[in-house]
Length: 301
Image (cartoon, rainbow, N blue to C red):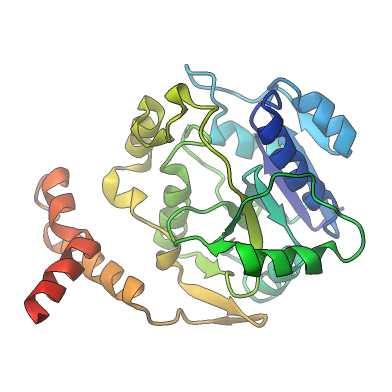
C-alpha cells in the first residue's frame, strides 16, 4: 500500500505546450517514493498519456454544465480507488521533488489532523525535462537562477489524511475559489494548516490561458462566480497561505513567522468581524489590507 495517493484532472493533451508541461509534471510524480498517481477525466489524449507514464486513469469524473470536472467527484473517486493513509490533490502543471513526500511523512508523524500546503516557484519551461540521475539538483539550480517564488495567493497542492474533506462542494476545477475554501474549511474545523514552503520546492511551469474562453484568466468566468457562491462568498475566497496556522521548517512544525502580509491579513479579519452586519460588497471595500496599507503609508509621509 502506498503512503500517498496523488490525484489530478489534467487539461486536454491537444495543445503541444500544455501536453509537454503536463507530461513533465506527471513524470516527476511517478518518480516520488511510495506514491500512487491517479489521473481523472476523459480529456483528449489523457488515456494515452496515462498509459505512456504508467499511472492509473479513471475517466468517469462528474462535470458541470460547462464540461469542467468537479472537485467533489475527484475527491470521491480518489478516496474510493485508493488505500493510502494520505491523499493529495495537485495541479497538473506542477513538478514535484522528493522533498514533497518527506515533508508529508514528517507532518503525518506529528499531527493526526493536518493539511499540507505551500507556495510554488514559477519557471518558464519549454522543453521535456531531463529526469536522468541528478535531475533534482539541476532543476533546483535552474529554478533559483531563473525562477520566481509566487505570492501566497493560490495553492497548487493539498496533502491530507483520507478522513479529511469527506464533504466537498461541487467546485469546478481550474477556476478560482475552491483552493481558498480548502484553507478556510481546515481552519474553521481546527485542522493544522501547515505551510511547507521552506522545506518543499514545487515548480509551476508557466503557461498562458489559451485553453479558456477568449484565452483570458478564469476570474471573470461564470464558473468562478459559482465557485465563489459555493465557497460561501468573497470573505472565504480571501483565505490564502497567509492563513496557515503553522510552518514546516527543517522538518519541524513551528508557529507562523510574523510578516507584514500576516499583519495586514489579521487587520482584515478583525475588520470583517467588526463590519459583519454590512453588505458583503461594502465590507470588501473596507477591509482589503493593501488599501489600508496604502492609506497608512500616505498618513506617515
